[in-house]
Length: 619
Image (cartoon, rainbow, N blue to C red; front, side, top):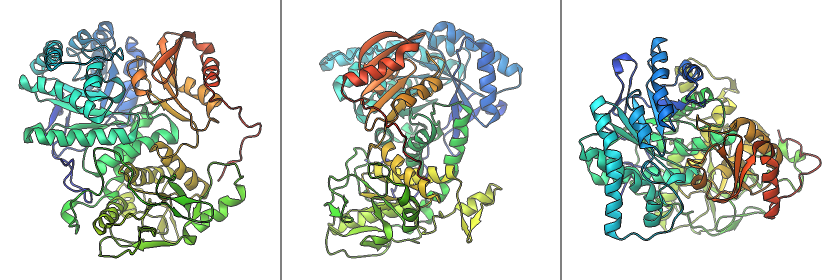
């Protein structure tokens, strides 16, 4: 199976078109040759018509092309009529997506008023109870028949009204039936979506798209790859568009890094027709990140038709994460890399000289090796080369006329062909000055000539962050890389922190508290931004602890299954606390919930008191 034509060169996956609304009157077409559509979601109560209208207008004002609104009940779904009517009366023609969970009757009401209905196969016709049950083939077939009976009325109504559907599978809300047959796996997510797609096709309805969301970028990448490969297996007319997103990515740099790893990796391989960056921030901020991320892809890829690449085999398993096998070697007297060692952080001599005086012995964020001091073979993977042992650290030579992702994948492929398992040092850019191929041309095209230092491009920090995350994150998700070097961010301290943050977001190292936080919507039962800030203030000193902050139970228990602790909205003003996916404390008043969470962490032996004096910032 293949999910793209080549892992070394870009060719956008050709999909059928999904028409959303009337394109002549503000609608959009997703797929085909059309530009990738950016979208977001409002966060207020759907019954608050004025707020819903205003938040939609705010999103449209910054370039959002598709706006999602939750409809948890029939009453909420009915109020979509008022929201859409007011938007149209004010000249706003943006298509609206109704977000449906649990209640088919809400979907049947929403389809009357909006252009798209999003359904989650994991909970549209099933209720999740984490029940363990073995299904015979006959029982499983009976369950599929029941699902068809629940879902078919919506399919027929969408077809009659010329609406669109999004079949949106979430890693955190797979049904018990899918979990028991396929497990908590990418295959389970894909099969869950395909069951609903087959019902659509049985009624000759094709105006739908897929999504495969997870808060773990590596899981998300594997799911989308497997989905596309499976669609290709089903036949050429299964070329439905794809919506990309990392769900519950969080806020700030961490949320942007996670999203860039997951979305950027797939965009770079030619997948994706519409995207959303899910941040625990005000929704309009998501659109800027979407635009910035899309703008980086041309400079980080080589078109297939322009490529001199002759390799076609994948140097990694695209559907199952497995770190590339290497021996462990010494980087210096204190640090090893490769094998079962942590993926190490390397810095340039210039960066080391700036940050070293500020590093304390117990600090977690610190340089582990200096690039100029390493015994590293710099290789041009576009030419034949020979390595006579497996214990030589290798990297791609600076200046190779390839994007970094393609170059490092090619290096791994060449080593595999030679039967070598050398550890690889990844770089976010193949230019020693930190510039990126194509960045100046892209900036000029956008009408924003970049600042220069010594004649070289200096990227804005937000762009440097996205580029480094896409390049290094994509390769780490492939299982490639034993050490990393960030040079695209010119700030010494910023580049060091960025390297560690990428490793944490990719699930390769844990040097600080990890947060899984949903982006808020009308289902949310508390102010996510305020509560997230409150929880972080109390817990961000905890190393290696993962905390999930969920506004409601739609994806909570499943999406936070690999979290240590969960803080989940259970009812207005009430919070439930989880250990893993098991609820242990119920209906705690919101005013007490953060401290009760701290007590729970303490009870399970993972609490430590914060240092009296915070560590100085490394800049």
